[in-house]
Length: 186
Ligand code: SF4
Image 1: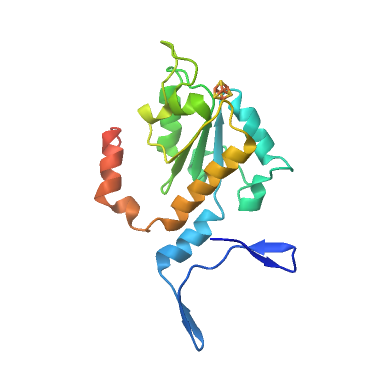
Image 2: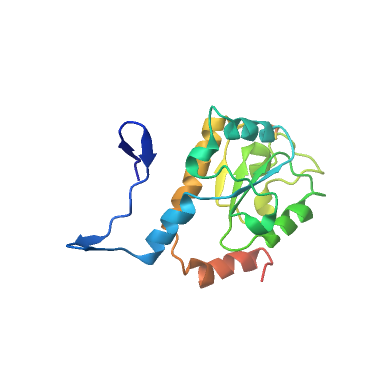
């Protein structure tokens, strides 16, 4: 969905395609909810090491995550939509990460930022978790050691795509329940 420019200054996202006529416009509820959700994601930064610094740059004025409606970081898992895991996750930290994920309200999304969060990175050692998807389901992986802010923004936009296209009944469906069950989450 490409942004629409007005007066070459203000950009707004396009409305989903719907059915319009004289005095009415109709669209699927999922698309309206998806449009609102995808442009007001509240991220929870779970930063443990160097990739977190790239996230700080992503939040700052030059890259400006606020352009996506996501300037409101949440440090309470109960008030966030997206957990962004950035950095090396030690095995001792894994239960903490999982606990934070479990405290997030549905619908929730997960982004693994950088090689460490995605796969353990260069730390192929007894103490480091070899990817956060061993303890929680991941929606988007961002490669790099560290990924540049552009890559983090690209991953964020992939999350937006997922949020935008998700059916509002998806979280109650068997497929999602099966995914959670595979992680031992009821
Ligand atoms: S992926 Fe690289 S930059 Fe990111 S936390 Fe690991 S070692 Fe640091």
